[in-house]
Image (cartoon, rainbow, N blue to C red; front, side):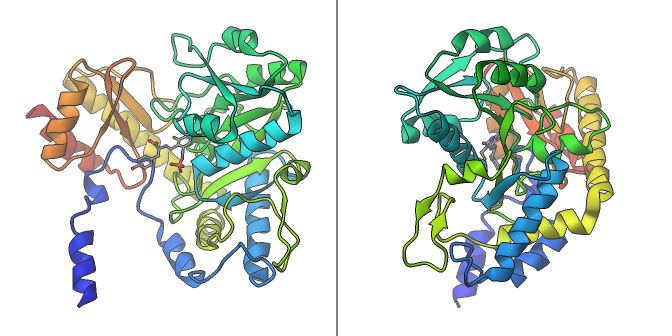
Length: 363
Ligand code: 0PR
């Protein structure tokens, strides 16, 4: 039986019950149900999938509202990488510089390496302050007449840190350069935290935002999100589609699933703002619990966690990661400073943290 074969492969995967490294999680039951309902949908042809297309517009409205901008325009894509590509591509097409460059923090995700290569833009990486936020002075210095975008991160991959987007926004306005905010992870954390950290369209300089429902939105993979301040940015991405039911396409991929749209919508609408807040609160409680437990065995966090990502300093980071992997646990590491890193996603419970710390003690 082919399914027995499939199962055998699937059983080789590691269960999320032992995963502390991932920014993805077990999809929410609402997401799973919605996903199944939309299995055959293809948003590459909105003339056929009229309802799914309408649903996507509703979801973008919902996300726009969350990000303080009811006029936001965008779409649900394959993930943060595609969202970042499209954000920078629109900015590059808007500015039309001779030798385009973008100014990004050293802490930016590796997807920007791909962007440099794909879009033929020079990547100018600038340094961080002692709290691992981008150094705003350095950003200002790196900008020149060929700069087509500044990038700020709201929830860095390694530490969950948030750049001073408000200050970047001022620079963006002053220099008339688009500001792309990579909130792939933080976009569905920050709005639900007690502590308010400005990062979205309420800051005038912000022109585009990456926000991925397949991370903290508990949607099914793939579900990334790119949102622009208004519809004019989509025009910068359009190509003609002569034989489709619609004339233009602003997305990067052609054929694309409606499943991520449906699953994201189901979770956000089904849980509502209050439900999301409860989940984020739980993740933060568990993050603090992990910090406490790790503290008891002598580990210190690199920064006080802002969101549910935390790294602990240790020179033996790589060795610890390898040993844990052998014992069935997955964590990750960061290089600067040397540390082990964990992401406390909704599938991570206090019991799981206890078990993990017990295992770590043995190493
Ligand atoms: N921007 C930021 C800030 C990110 O953290 C990530 C991914 C991306 C963009 C790119 O998103 P996509 O991977 O959706 O294209 N951050 C995680 C990482 O690279 C992704 C991840 C998720 C890795 C689950 C492992 C894993 O098990 O670490």
